[in-house]
Image (cartoon, rainbow, N blue to C red; front, side, top):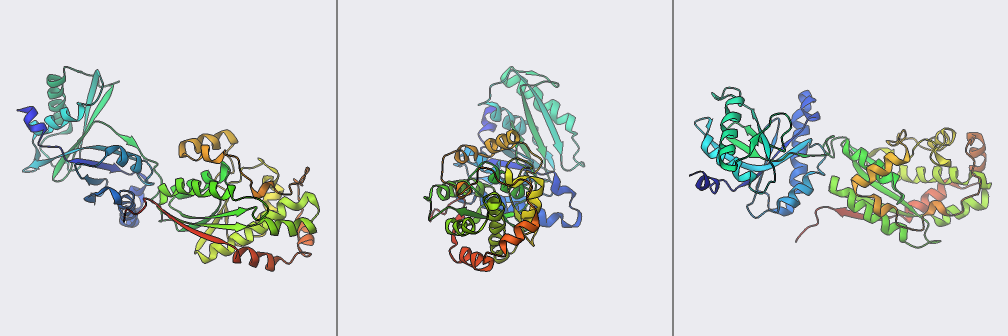
Length: 405
């Protein structure tokens, strides 16, 4: 009888949980709906039938033929999800679970698992149910012992079976997968991220995406003085990042000729700071066009010459919008570790011809004075150089998942 009941509950479901959104008070509905929308977008090419907000958890109904590995890979990148479980649902009968059917579903979930000990953890969304969580745990645990011959271990089990009693049905799963947490992408407005093709800037962008920002990307290429290698790298990096936010604009600015003009005017020690100030001005204009409220850089304090305290202050003077530096207190090892987790590291370390390597002086200034920079900039036609950069900007729109039509 138990094996017959197992075959009745083959529908695949996901229950996703969030933590931070539950603290949003009167705005909670907005944040929850944004998360539901993002989940639908992440799974839109997989034939997902329903994504339902149950207020404290989100239930996703999957078609029987869905590849659960693809679903898992997509959901671990949905910002706002704290954790999720894949399993199956059993309808409640007159408000109470069919314990025999629930036991059958639990055993079915364990068929592909390797374990010697287990425990059952039950939660009730509706505390008015006659059966307590402990009642359910004991009944399901006993059935699993009989069917599998495995032993219960409440303290250090090899595997945990999760039971969630919802309003109209019960959910059963034998796994819990960590999500990225944070906030749903889009709830914190838009930011303009400078992305170089190196290790740091993609990590900085991700940290703002995870806090709910929609990132637009700006890359300064050394073209026409170098090849498009850095541009190709950056497109690959943005393709990785849009798995977390689903759509992005990438602006590529040919910056080589602008750098040449700065070199012809400025003393060598000040070039790097002047490059960065010019990049900030151009990025800020693009940010305004895209309705961004801030700029984002991958600066880490003291890592390179442009990131000393004095030079950070001088560079920031060129901006009117806020400049966010999410990596400012991280060391290189911490940034590399996060890049590996994010999936951008291997792309970032590929060799390229970056504009930052053009005309780099052997001894750049690390304690630049603003007065010195302003004096040099008076010899440059700043507005013309900014206008040139904007006119030559090349826009690419990228989306994930790609349309199948």
